[in-house]
Length: 467
Image (cartoon, rainbow, N blue to C red):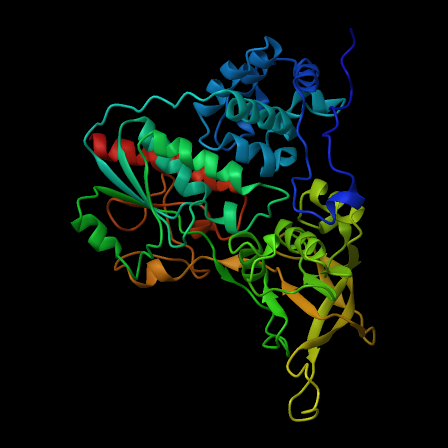
């Protein structure tokens, strides 16, 4: 039988339905679809897909297990390399990583590796109630700062080797960006909680509401008997444009907006203050911008704009997220850049009850010039092209910087000009026994790249403490 040229479509909620709820958009493969998609894998001898995976999952092996109807065996293959399979299957950009290397993709569409990983993880979570076997202790203690993807990966890899690992999380729920940054409709909180529970069953302790740099310092962790420390504190410091009006009520950073919705449960109609209704402009073109725009729509916005200074070809968000946003009715205002956020002024109009609130956003149209340092064509203003968007809320989704707290309270920790912690190829910082990875080093990046950094650091910590 000839191989199907296109990967099997992912079943989803209809756009007109999902735009008004926070249920997961993608519904997942059935066993029948998973088997058919797995049969598209050529099981290449040179295994290029593995090279494209930042955590080096044995992709041909786990797909071969699916072909044999051994779904639990496939899960075992994945978890040898990944501590967060149900997360990765949902949010990793496989199209630019493992799937971009797939031999099938040379002539046809690549195998749906991410969709198959999600299927296997969901099958395990739904059908396997047996707790993972807790490894025998090797007597060493390691502290992990931050419970995002890099921290959880580092903790999981070390726990499997018998280390006693404690994860310290500043917020009240473990998961880092997985719970405060990614919306429920893309990554349900129950999925993250399940992955964290699996790590706890391996012996990982999770201490929430502990702010390293305030509650405890890195030096105090060493004094408490931890022999090595991994810093995975993320990039939680939002960037702004520094244009007039950014201090008006109704202007959010994407971090604040998504945290209020996700972690503080505004999406469940709690008492958490957040915009409801009106028109919303989201500035930026990455995955975070898509998440913020689609969240605003589900919270009741009548109109949502994505305002991005480059064209659709330069848009950094995943193609799937852009497609979903368009299907849901979000309007893309491309080659546009904000210059000022407008609002009522107390002094000029003291009678209006909306004093201090956003009433619009002035923008200028752009055109693409020569490439900049990123390799993308630099956007240049078109003189005299100013216009105003009538909006009530503006969400800035133009990136984040590493959290400055830990490095500002830790002597001898070298950082670069962007605030990222400086590390070597093994994740070792300028402090002996202190390692770092993920967004705290690179700035905002992908979940899977952070996981890869946590994996590298775990191997280095194991080697350091075994010498």
